[in-house]
Length: 346
Image 1 (tube, one colour):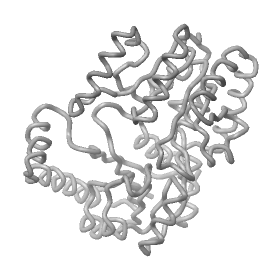
Image 2: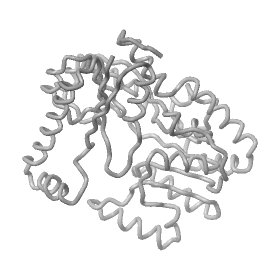
Image 3: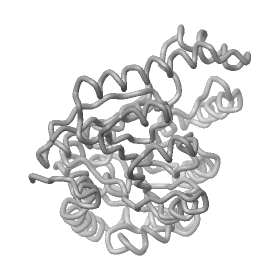
């Protein structure tokens, strides 16, 4: 059996999910290949000028050419590989007409809420199966006479795993700087000036001058080493998790009945996690992570757990064992294949 994984990539960092899912398919007996597309547009100055600036001026020609070229590569890959399964992650760049020409079982796995995946109804209807990582999307799909199944994300145990190392960071966070997240991180930086804090993420954006002034303010306050304007790849994130006494996890406001992959990745790294007060996290992982109600509660939890290393390490160890036994990408692919009634040779 053969499978083709088609997934998004970001020029700033590589979360590793496309590769992890491809490897999970190999683990259950499939000859799996991977084809990637850029979430927005290809990186580089030439692309910024030719595609991004042109679109800002109302010229779509060069962007449409890029999308057409990618769709041609999808068609060529399917004709060459003749896969039994085409598993698409997010899928914003794959046209409905391209999908309709593919004879394999076509599966879409949305690693974001569906309405943020930039998909048309025509694209969604072109798939044989649609999986969502947040249960609220099932209602959204049903309203549009579409069906889907809930399938949470998972973790790649070859990237995220525990390793004995010196924990020289008190509190660590990595992710996008949405306004509410930024306010919470700024509150912590101001409230815990004597603690070792490291907050990573590309938070200075060339199209948003206000972010430049924010960055300058951090530098002037002596917080330049706290708010690090840099994206991290999956292996770097795993290393930072291991070095950290406490890892903070904050969800996007649109998450309701699902969780982001950080939940699993922090647990798999053998690290102690404090997560926002999400119902899905409480119901499914409440025994393994701490949850906070607001930024003041978060601060109190940080201070309390920094002072109790034994309890911290005990909870992290239990979380590690739980996630490896239940929430790897191999578990997810196994569930997906069973749902699709496809072979599994693991």
